[in-house]
Image 1: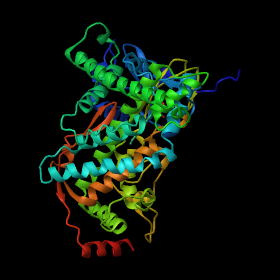
Image 2 (image 1 turned 180 degrees about the vertical axis):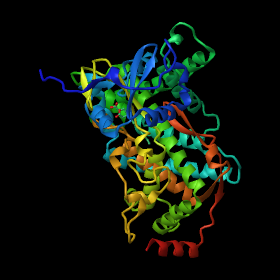
Image 3 (image 1 turned 90 degrees about the horizontal axis):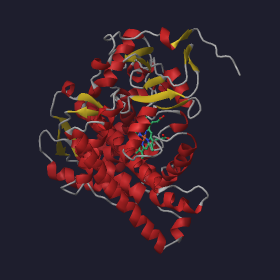
Image 4 (image 1 turned 120 degrees about the vertical axis):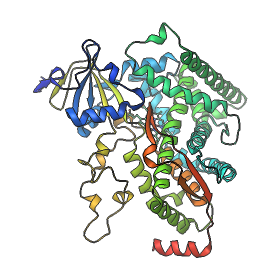
Length: 487
Ligand code: HEM
């Protein structure tokens, strides 16, 4: 076996000192944990140790080392065993938590369900959800301190349930929306359990644990009904086994193979899709809205682009999406400054060397992904929201944001074989919903920009985002003007 080469071991790394015995455990505010990891990276460098009751946990913010870790899955690294256990404990045995052969099998069907061809054919379904949002927004127009993030959460649930289960849940138009309410309780609790060194909930159940379990049970029941209905549909029309029309049917169709999915795997993957596809996309939508509401000039530029391309018509052609280059740069820039999945949790499956540091098998490493894209080392004037940095530089003398621009430092969707399979779907959703919102409304921020805070609960959302929508009066003259700006 090849001898590993290194100059130091994980024990030699620095890090915040913390308290005797307890280590750093009391310093971790779970809702701001990503900011703390970033702050410590500035102090202790891109590879540093934390200590939980004597157990070491390494945080890595180095973009190349993180790429190495993400790339070497499922061979050298896996997701944190404890995290997978917390997720599986509540019955979500899906592709996100799976490892090894089980992961490969689940990944294949997930990737297929979310491939470009399927997403493209599902485009009219996304536009239908945008239509509903637009109707809803017309009703709340003029309302101050409006919490638009809730609408985005509903819209993404509707898209995912449609694509994954072939079911039109329509939470956007349902006034009492229980499913949505229950989903919202899941991530904060999982985050709290993953970051809790002692699994107290296994011995003592608090009121919030009970509430969480009720929510899990509710969603379990809803998803169970989807599975039963799909099984009934397939028994009435066995052709579906040959040509499944959604993810759920594709999983059931695997029953004919040598290695069919179990009920638990089907259930776990439906759950995974629902969870993975909702908060991530809706939080990104909220952050994009935040930036455009806080930067009216850029909002007008987005609107000018929309008017120039759509000329007052509704977006109804998938191929048109390509043309929205400025809007795409706004989306990308929002995701750079506000990456909604700021860290991933990894564990070494064998003795490994990361950079020149030796980590024994079983070591824990947090691939911290929000520090690098917000660092001047990788992006010039990194804290400035500048969509231009993603556009081709046509200006004489060069765009100042192009002086330092390292796209590899952005790992919004992870990396390697486990890169997010929902990337393309979410990119289409982001464009469709943002285009619809700003085509029809002017959006203003009702709180000072600095009052909108990053809140981490497995994903990172804009806490306290409050806006007001105002119908745009798009007249012909304005549209002609925007057309000339475009040229
Ligand atoms: C802006 C939206 C999204 C972001 C930022 C995002 C981000 C991520 C990240 C960082 C990972 C972990 C990747 C890794 O371990 O390397 C991931 C995994 C995953 N995402 Fe997404 N995601 C988004 C939308 C979606 C959507 C819409 C779906 C499906 C409906 C989805 C389904 C999944 C699944 C199933 C996994 C697990 C993949 C695996 O472990 O093999 N995601 N996502």
